[in-house]
Length: 217
Figure 1 (cartoon, rainbow, N blue to C red):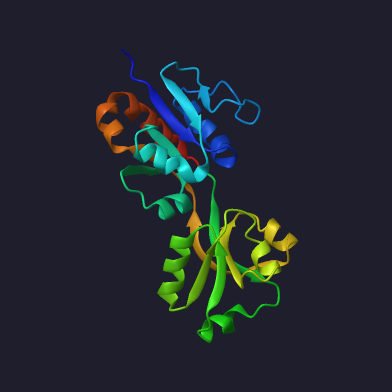
Figure 2: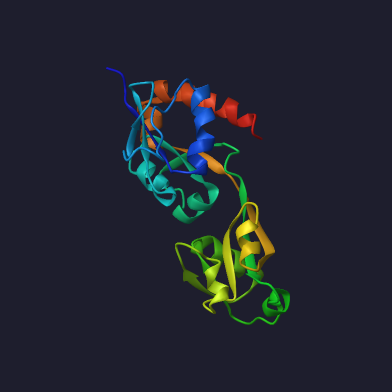
């Protein structure tokens, strides 16, 4: 009996940029998640299916074996902690950066230097806490799930820590990047048990992903 493989992906940029990697492994998703209401998508290989989950949930599905492998941003993996996951390949896709941004005119350098308590909104609480702690800056972190840019505009925070790709959303809301925390890209994550039990089926796919991702480096 052929072993079933389940790949966890999130909609949007990660899904789109994973498609060429799947194609390199001879796998094509036969339905578009933007137009299909299905959460489990078939592929041209009856033994491989794709589940569509929220980006922040990908590591959890893989960790607990509900998916054999998945694609998740480094930002998501740092918050998750990566327990129970094998992370073999940086796929060099969905590239962006994690940055600190403030409202135009806010004197971030002197606020940080004076040792004042900064109020920061972010979805990436763990990463932000470690970043500011390493600089000796006291912060009050407020967790939000969307529209971080609104925080400084309505007085909820002094700064935001968020992903930036083009910077267009920041500019549109009169915010400026003041500190670069790290470069972000997406990684392949594999369930450790699946790697042992389904190695024969998984290995060729992992190797195809690795070859294709080197072209993106």
